[in-house]
Amino acid sequence: DAKTTQPNSMESNEEEPVHLPCNHSTISGTDYIHWYRQLPSQGPEYVIHGLTSNVNNRMASLAIAEDRKSSTLILHRATLRDAAVYYCILRRGGNQFYFGTGTSLTVIP
Amino acid sequence: GAGVSQSPRYKVAKRGQDVALRCDPISGHVSLFWYQQALGQGPEFLTYFQNEAQLDKSGLPSDRFFAERPEGSVSTLKIQRTQQEDSAVYLCASSQRGTAGELFFGEGSRLTVL
Image 1 (cartoon, rainbow over the protein chains, first blue to last red):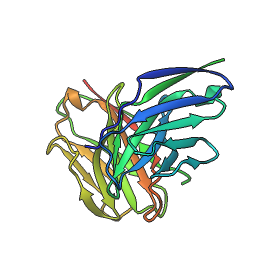
Image 2 (image 1 turned 135 degrees about the vertical axis):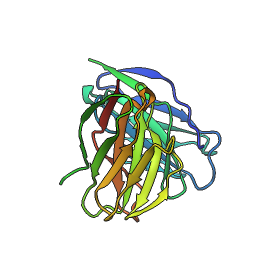
Image 3 (image 1 turned 90 degrees about the horizontal axis):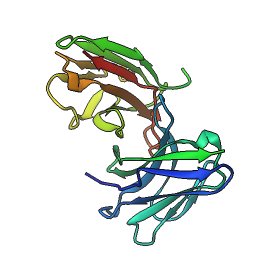
Image 4 (image 1 turned 180 degrees about the vertical axis):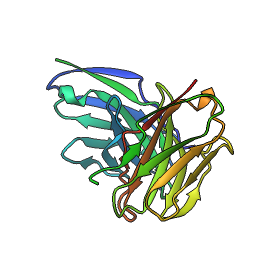
């Protein structure tokens, strides 16, 4: 399995940036790095993905280390609606997604 | 529909009963996945379909679990002779073939086996 390691939990103050780390030391050259988040009683929701270069979209930014053994999801201004479990996932092969343990993000008003 | 729809949302079964969980993917989505999520854990892969073909069923935990997608659209996950360890949320996701791989998840079916 393509394993990822994340902190179990993190806290952030509202309207401040949040950096969520992920280690994936066993990543292979063709693995994509995906991030999903899951709110209580809902299915996971796509956030962002990348291969080698840093990526930005309307939800977040993804910073990928040069050796690709780690990555960081950046929420630029945390809101209360960003409180969720964030999963860092390696996509190995066309349709194989391995979810990690996830980081539970608490946003403090 | 606008999103992935799963039914029932909640199912309580007595140990030994058979259950069937339904997934309606987003119209036109070729790929369909089933995941199992135990309480406090991340989703774990069960099986994957491309159209009606089940291309990967390596995550099914036992031969009591069976999934089908006969017409390449709606899928059913069937669990025979349910056991307490089958209690979990069963998530369905779909995606378009050829995209970068964004998965669209349903809200899940929560199965409780007594």
